[in-house]
Amino acid sequence: MSVSPEKSKLSWFWPLSAIAVPLVALVTKTKRLGALPKDGAYVLAPNHMSEFDPLIVAVSVWRMGRAPRFMAKASLFKIPVVGWILRVTQMIPVQRESTSTGARQTLDAAENLAATGRGVIVYPEGTLTRDPDLWPMRGKTGAVRLALEAGVPLIPAAHWGAEKIMPRYGKFSLWPLRKKSIFIVGEPIDLSAFEGREREPRALAEATTLLMNEIAALVAQLRNEKAPAERWDPSKHNQKETGNYES
Image 1 (cartoon, rainbow, N blue to C red):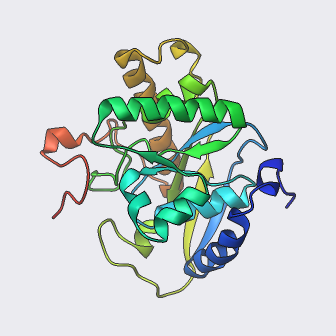
Image 2: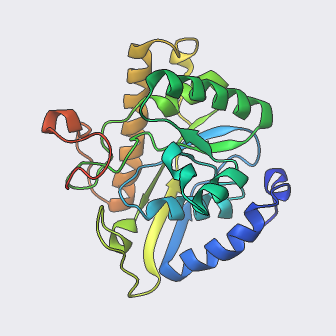
Image 3: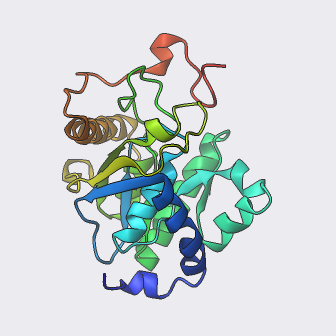
């Protein structure tokens, strides 16, 4: 595999990938479908249904030639070692508690994306899905707004198989080794109807629904099942928006 211009400049990603990639490969054999842009900025929006799936997404993105930068909870940056890794790899902290702070961070991240041509991974659900059958649930508008603000492609993605390694809020299962998983990158979403409307809540909500439907369609392809017609809404089921809703 040829090295992309972005990856050739990543001093910290290389030693970290030398550790992470073999370890993840020991746990899961991931089949990868689709492709990411060879260069230039983008927002990648995958589903989220296991605490383990960020590793599958990160290694898959790295194998596809791009640096796996996430928008991550700000609280993670305070954890020893973890916080250091997040900082040296230039992950983007997100404050969940403050809407104004979150909006400012979205704008800052958009400006940085446009200026540097880097990709970023954003979980549009914001947390593990609450759908009882692990389908993508209702999304939040951050991924769409980031793509619109930066003027970069918004790319849906999906994975399946992580639930066998670590069930949602469950225990990690190492054996048997090399459990199969699959990761797919879809086609960029056409956001032309929403350009210039990134400050309009209704436009952001419509675009986010479009995004979540595309992600659900990719998950349905991987599962060889039909996705629900509507996305699960935690507020209609008295479920917490963040954290372990089962506790």
